[in-house]
Length: 268
Image (cartoon, rainbow, N blue to C red; front, top):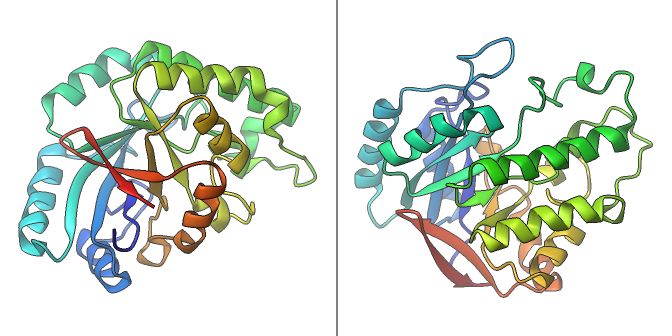
């Protein structure tokens, strides 16, 4: 395949991006991408500002379908969404994914116990390892409550925002709960993504960490999408040049794209 496809991309339809869709698509063309999936945030019941990560879905499809037609064979434009999962939203999400013909759906954990670990207040008075373990337990609860997504996004998203920079995060310390998450995803026919925003945030690793990617593969996981989590054109395909060697070292031979919610496998 050509330049690796970016399957986690945000535009001005997301509450935390002001990038016009066309600018992101033009950047994709300039980088030589053959395929991109726009996955704007849809986070119902976001704390303090419930409307921050909601968008007009009909407008979204209208705009993206027009670009899909305009770019034709120059760039394959897929229509996706990143759903912010919380257990009490399961029924809302079930109705949502049935109503709209997405190509691809990321399920992600941004909010735990009505708070986002992005904010330092989430961590106050708590040990990092306790917070991180609780986050992973919430992921397992989400998977068991609602699983009509295609991949789980940035499984260890929470480590990006740990305020204690001396804290050492290791897969082995959470192996029991992480393995249960991975096994459950595999049993349900769901994948994960390798999210290169971990490199952008200076972690030196993707989200999830390579050890988790390797373990997912050891357990039989095969569905793996690639995402920059880009909110600006300059973020698109961030450090993707590192991925072929990294993923092969973890045991992967293929990466995955989606069309009408069906996986398509591509040799690395």
